[in-house]
Length: 258
Picture (cartoon, rainbow, N blue to C red):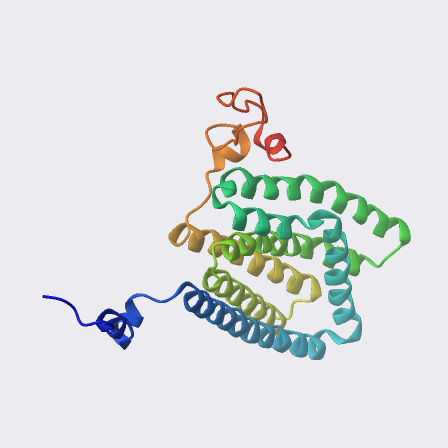
């Protein structure tokens, strides 16, 4: 039996068919809307929780204590500029272009951040002591440093999620981190602890957010292979060579620079 002209297009235009087979442009648009909604919702809830913490800390700690906390955040954030140096933006672009590159890039970026952070933070704290900042300000910066570094690892996680167009998991992890940090900080202040304890609760919340991020990564897009990042094994990309069968036998961090 011969089909009536236009019958296929009429069927394809029905709502049921549209729900089953979206055009690439429409599907990309819906993903963008959902990702924006997830990130915006998480930012609103998280920043509101942080605002509550700052308001309560201002009442309990006074000008000196709150100033030490703000200084610690600003100082450690300044040190992290030398640690990050555009690594997360590069990670996002590289993995979005070739998703398999996550296996030799993701954990290499984290290891490079660790290698940079340790000497930079040690030198910066020595400089604080030489300049003569108060012991309260120095102690606050010390306890905030792990939390600020954890925030940097969370941004690397976000780059991997964003490369897969999955913003819901990092938004959830970030929201939990902010709410938990604010809640623990308020509890510490209610119990009579000072600004150093509030800084410690910030680091605890940030580290918890990173752990949740890795758990969500495992359950959604999958965790990149660790051994490929540190051992130069099966995940290592081919090195430039006249022979197409020759593969790179050096460590993967060197491979990724080719």
